[in-house]
Length: 537
Image 1: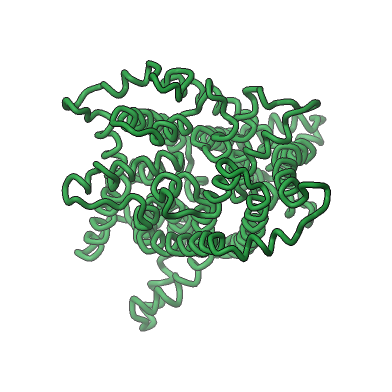
Image 2 (image 1 turned 30 degrees about the vertical axis):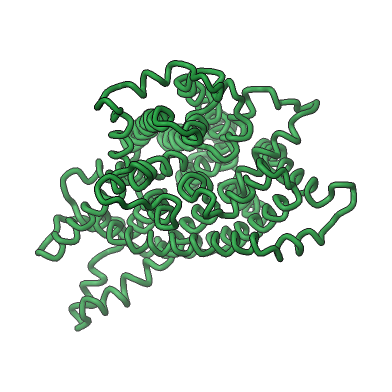
């Protein structure tokens, strides 16, 4: 645990605490009265209210749309199922900036709905909610569908034989077993939407602001650190409560999983009703997931003189405004280099953390597990700005170093590494290690000869997830990426923030490139994924 604890202490706890310290103790004396003053402001209350409301609405809408998909992927067997499973997972590994860009191309000014019906949804709450469903659809399908596929349908059939109706059998047999998984999925969706930043920043404009977006505004635009510090504390407390509830839900889910049958339960649809359900899910996937991505690609080729590669060619040259110190195309190489370095860090730190969590050490290890999840919920904006004010003097003067970006990205990648590797490590029979030790193997050799062959595939999957997540990190990177070394999400956001048809087209082209890189990474993950891990998210 030494290296993971040191890593999170220096590169997560220290920057966050420093932001709070500077905001609430500007002259050496604590000013806790700022908490009450800030939380009593009408504009801040509006932000808090909208943050909670849109998270609840996004969670409910996501469950409504995705639960039928979870059932279809769990119970039905149809051609192209594995490919479609990969397709619905693509949005989750896409950067939130790209998600916002895709919906901007669909429902924004000059978008598909604007051209066909004169309907614009950008700067509206509906665009934000739909983008959140697009982003979190896979969370429900993976989490709930993974458990649903392991439930033995014969239990429900037995209830039908005893006289229960189809609805009563499902409500009394299947639903209670699914409740922990549905609750876990709902909590994760709520967590992701509660801390939404990139989607709200692009689609909400100045009309809507979440807690994360307001922290960015108070920090980067207004330089109001006291208000940003209070909002960071509020977000920290809220996320901590969400993670505590999530941890209890996961434990209940693990108990339920011991009761299910392990055999496959998927079969071809039977009857008109099941075929209609499958068709409805396929249509919803096409409209909700494929259409926004397809419109984004189409906009990247559509110029004023027809379709062509004009916007892609423009990515290789500098503009006259001086917004970019290097051609936007160089952001591709920057992102790949940063992502490789961040992946190496995340696999090292996350692998050690997962190994530590396999040891039974009581509350200390459980608290460490919760600590590893905090970067997914605590403001990335706070972490990024905290990097600038803490890592700027010896012995850690990293402000001008390229490693600053991979360090921030690795913080987000570590939880995915831990969650991917931990179930596999816990499944390794301890007697195998003991037998190796009896035969004279050192602990290092026993790990190399026993554990590594068993967890190699999980390690590759974890590395792939860390790479995809690092590639799309935006909240912290927007603060610390140097002007001459922008990442793909930062470059897209800069292009979208400038007026003009050429800038918009370049943003679409750069987003398409980023989408292709993320999709290829995910498809490689699907090829590595085994039946044992396919139900894990």
